[in-house]
Image (cartoon, rainbow over all chains, first blue to last red; front, side, top):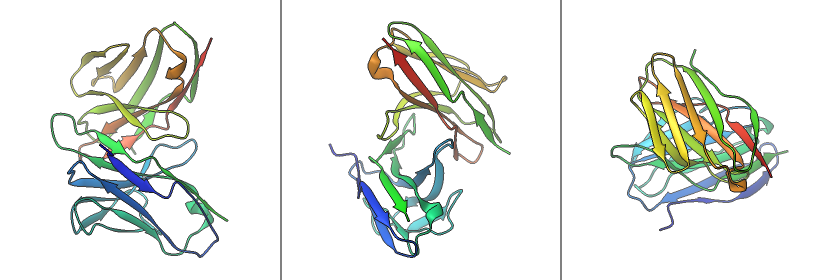
Amino acid sequence: NAGVTQTPKFQVLKTGQSMTLQCAQDMNHEYMSWYRQDPGMGLRLIHYSVGAGITDQGEVPNGYNVSRLNKREFSLRLESAAPSQTSVYFCASKGTGEIEKLFFGSGTQLSVL
Amino acid sequence: GQNIDQPTEMTATEGAIVQINCTYQTSGFNGLFWYQQHAGEAPTFLSYNVLDGLEEKGRFSSFLSRSKGYSYLLLKELQMKDSASYLCAVTDSNYQLIWGAGTKLIIKP
């Protein structure tokens, strides 16, 4: 069972370049989300989705766009990368049930020069 | 504002017991999570508390006091593999997760 698969694992961009982070889950979860993790700070929610075609902003959405074309996949796009977007990015999905815990992808280390 | 506080770093000895505290001030409360995160890896779920009291799961236990806005994670019989960061997160009244910055636990032989 693969769980949450996230690519790429590492990426270096120049300021102004664009890129898309891919995320897919095989657990039939409705809820998917993107977080960034910076040193000394808690995980911060960028965008989330409660189902195909439905997305909403989290705590730090500026500079990011997302797309949820189907239940499995949720992508994060940086249209014009900035050094402030240097971070570790995690995709996470959440099931329903007694404990709605998050399942995380392996993360993307992004550096913007 | 909403806030979760936990110590930045703790050190403990292999075989010992360590308690990691978490205090929170959030708009409402709908549960508290503890996640473990090894360096360079993704967070993984450890425990969940929604009612006051102690939840035990093997070597790990988690305690919650809603009236005090306080939780702790207790790790017993520490092993080297327990060296990791431990993240406290609270679900607020809007069912959004608020995360602490994490506690880095260093285990020494």
